[in-house]
Length: 67
Image 1 (cartoon, rainbow, N blue to C red):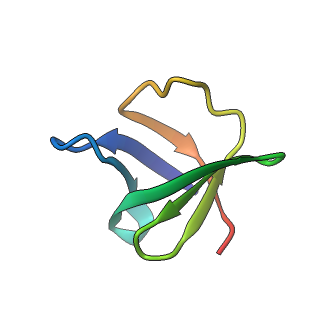
Image 2 (image 1 turned 60 degrees about the vertical axis):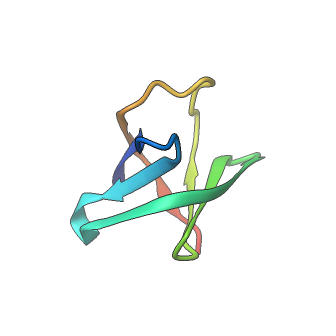
């Protein structure tokens, strides 16, 4: 699914999923073989393969939902 990553005014990373009209804070990040995994405040886990460091924000990327 396509998501937009951005930072809010306090510096917290946010994920916005347009098809679900959902915007959530990222509560944790980890690296796996599949890519960078973002855990959202609502419990979703999204993986972004091939994401560069440091993040260029805001940006729209393709992510896959794990949980």
